Length: 439
Image (cartoon, rainbow, N blue to C red):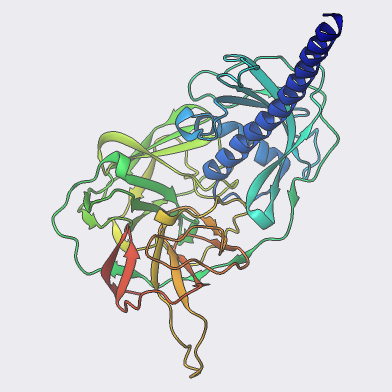
């Protein structure tokens, strides 16, 4: 009996030790998933970011909280995530230093021996931007004294807080070499659209393109893409809603007239012009919405997340003019892009339109099979051949170096086998569509 009891006790102790080890491993894995959730959310929220300084990136990271912590965008299985920056404020940290963050995450049960539903976990990290992946990276570090076990949760759309805590050792804000860029794509427009109902707000994605300087005024393209499954009728924009540091900035808007019909994944653009005012920073503390295209509700506009670009720099009461919509076809190109984005998420299949590759380039020698992928989104993304999925109906891509695609850009992708030969057509939204080259 004694020997048997000893064996039983030893087995229980061994099981407890094993369970403890598994719990630590699970905790480490969950911490990693929480950091991945944060970085992937920032990649989407700050797509197009051109890094200027640590203070600029910290401000943008904090402002992105309402998008990043949205449970509908958290699909990693981690559950609720909150975060805060910490360390010195602007002026106290090197301009090229990484941004320290505290990340709290809460799971709903961790297995048969780990039932921690509703319990918060905390991990600290240094945020940086990896140019080679056009993505945020989070390097775990030890948390400083004073980190609370539960977050001080902001209210509603408030930015993430900043905590006055000792920072970790400095790290580099930007690492890696940038990938190659895509080339300007042809302006491909569908030859027909059929009947269309008014666009719904859920079917539209809007963003600002790179700023332009015209005679006596500043201007920025307002880009929109129909992300819905059907063609829709896009009404003219009637006004803009601008907030700065949380306060409304009243504008006098000169609206345009007319409407356009957009096929699925087709884009249009309008030009926003204003007389600039010196001394106003057009960084992330500003938010912009547009009125009119989809009914009475204002539609949020993705801002170019680079200091001094994109957002109207105007005083309250200033006049802003909106031009009529111009159809852009598949890919909302807006001319030469002076911004060099260093953050862009992976391209998704639904964001790409595909045309047949050319069997040769006029040399008379057959080339490897290929297709041409056109970006139809209004924000940039990173295409990694052989890793990024192409639309259904296209052969698998051969592995190759990553390519950064900005709106309106395209790239030739080598495929494992020959794809469909469909001249004069484009594969978009899961079907081949007849197009005309309007460039």
